[in-house]
Image (cartoon, rainbow, N blue to C red; front, side, top):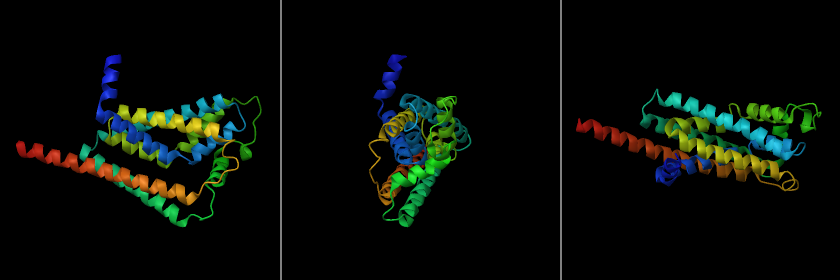
Length: 233
């Protein structure tokens, strides 16, 4: 089993899919509402409990995205799935470009994210809960609800539907873990910092444009291979 795992890791296509999935999740999730949920929870509770509570919820979302994506892959040819993923990523690029256009030039991503995340928490303003409340369960539920229907979840379903499940899961899980860990550790570091909303939206729009182009390339290549196989019959 160890040898087969090493063989997978040595496979260029496997690593490329892992890296693409890692970048997709990392860019979509960084400074997103769920990232700030983990940050605010870590400011009021033990960091190790917050880390594993929030990460467990995101890992469950990864599994659910894999299930939904696999179900979709059974209903459509691979080439169409790549093209569908390209249109999905393209629409995200447009949404982030719209956010960039309408964002306040002086807007602070840190403050805006904290306010949005505070609304998602099951406690008013992120205040510390009673010791009787299980912290792990609270972190898990807050993160799970915050991620449901999020752009990242939809993007993961598209990625799972059009790419092999195992490398997509690995890339997504690694990205979620590093992002959750960064959110838990970032509370004190970002307390007095400002990050431009427009800058974050611009980077996200450009990144999803690249993802759309890559998916479109894969879709066109799959169509060409399918036409080639048909002509040989």
